[in-house]
Length: 248
Image (cartoon, rainbow, N blue to C red; front, side):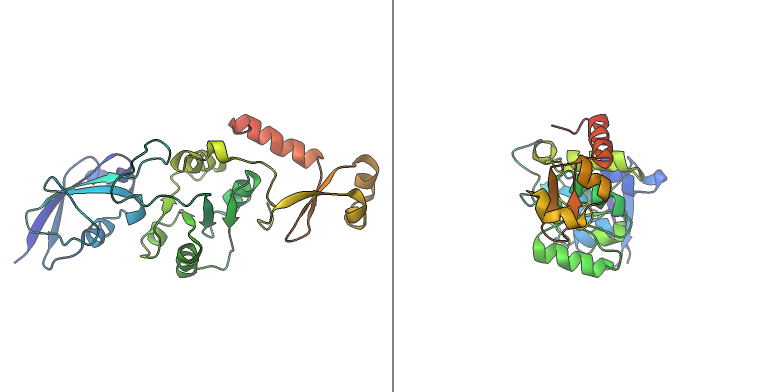
């Protein structure tokens, strides 16, 4: 005999639902008991986006089994820093924050590094590789792929709503409370290594002729050895940060 439960998703969790389901009680039919995690993900909502589940008015966990005639309310995670007490199912983000991004977010990866955040990105990683590395290194998964967030090893993650860089950065900064942790120009945009000031003499052989002539202060990535200086590219990046109101 087929059983039914009714589920209401709150606030931003409606982003994952069909239009006809948003803001309404969703009827869920089932023959065999499933965990609450399996149920919400079957309806399209990945578990890292969920902060709390109420089952018939009582706190529920992802491992609980759904029961016939259950009424279940599902609430989203809250932005880090907005509350001293996180919802019962929300896993705190690692501190300091460390990110890993999927193949679609290469530009976002570069700009998170520009802001000073440890950010891994490789075009050849599949979902399993990203989920496994996130678990091993306690990293936050950022993605435009909802299926990636459903991987069981992903504990902390976020699905980017926007496809535009500036809006994506604002989303990540807000969700994980990063504004006070921004440290521009301290990490290599190309490889994620840390950047430190070096003497001109130590990098002269790597500099274009005009750069040698007009600049005296240089910075170098400790990993890939790329050299940086405060030229026109630096000015463009400064302007970008100012326009986003992210510069401290």
